Amino acid sequence: MIEINSTLRPDARDGQDTSRQRDERLALLHSVLESRTFAKSKRLAQFLKFICTLTIEGHPNEINEQKIGIHVFDRSPLYSAADDSIVRAQARLLRQRLEEYFEHEAPSSPLVITIPKGGYIPVFEPRNHHLTAEVAEPARAPEPVPSSQTAPPQDTKARLWDRIPRAWAVTAIATALVATVAACVWYAGLHRSSASDVLWARMFNEDRPVVIVPSDDALVLFEEQTKTPVPLDEYLSGSYLNRNVSPGSPSFSLTSDWFAAHQYTSTADLNLTLRLGRLAAARRATVETRYARVLRIDDLKSHNVILIGGLGANPWVGLFSNRLDFEVNYDWKNSEGYVLNKHPAAGEAAVYRDKVIGGSRHSYGVLAFLPGTEDQGEALLFEGTGMAGTESASDFPFNSAAFSAFAQRIGATSQRMPYFEALLETVSVGGNAPEVHIVTYRRVQP
Image (cartoon, rainbow, N blue to C red; front, side, top):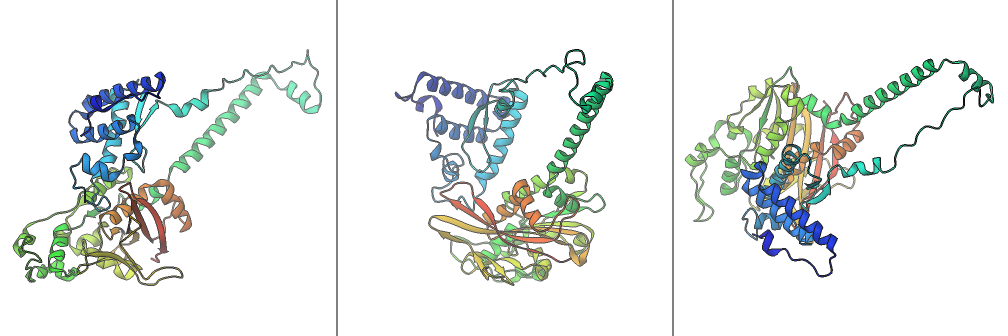
């Protein structure tokens, strides 16, 4: 781990201002690390210390997800940042913790630390720096308006204006200004009401409870060991546990009894569940989380449902297979995730497989908003060919700009969200945060 005091070295080419800036940043970093906000978050403190130290030293280009995973979270040098979301999940918490510190513990600090989304390079910037441009030029005093004694009116409009009592004129101007401000506030409110809000309002309805169902990672282990998928009927009856689960290698041996007794899910699914639960719309609804293995068909008939994970990790997705063009599945024999495109349009592939191209890893996710089972209620599916793919689907509706642009393409309005499915590709290069884009999409008929 990098030590701040011992590793920082002034560059002979730097001037006094640069050294002073370095000292200010170091002092700020020490204050943050020693604060109450970070006192019980040693790992987040190490995360912040690692990226800030490299930045202050002048090596921000060395900061990436892979190195953070290795140096801060003790991951193996060979681990795949695309499949292990520990850094991305902790980065979200770190951003929240920094906001809490500067809002509550250091509200008067002239310098703040932020970590812009999409990367891990910290930024040291003056507080409210974005207001500088607004106050740079002082407001001009209004030019005096000539009175009728000093400047006779030049035309009929001027004569009419002079005949209006000054108090009435001021009142009219004030009324116009209030109306203008009200219109601006109304428009801004519409603008802030993003397409995601329309989606969340559909899902989290006060009149219908919501059940969130994370993936069954114990099932994934079972399928990995047996090299065969588990269909929904076998999953519900538990008959799949009667299969021969002889280990694929002597070092990996789990029995049917072990699988029956253990319930696991991923940290990525838990993070998504927490994000959904913090939504304003979710606070007004009745929301429960149910493990996939104990869910029942009747639950889906009486609830709106949110399913997390592809068919191999959450067999309940199979109930919606007939409505989906993009089926996320896994080839257990070849240990390869893929998306089957059932009806490829021109320029589309029939199958999208996880792959590595030129050092960058490509994974796929599907976000689908559908009618619920037997057309009752609503269903929202977050699927992926792996953890990175599922995260791409999870992050998409929380990206207001990207999701609003997509919603416009499918004909969404401020009151209406059509049913849809979107195929997403996430590309991770050199261990940096993955980039996500839409490959293609479908509107789903109710």
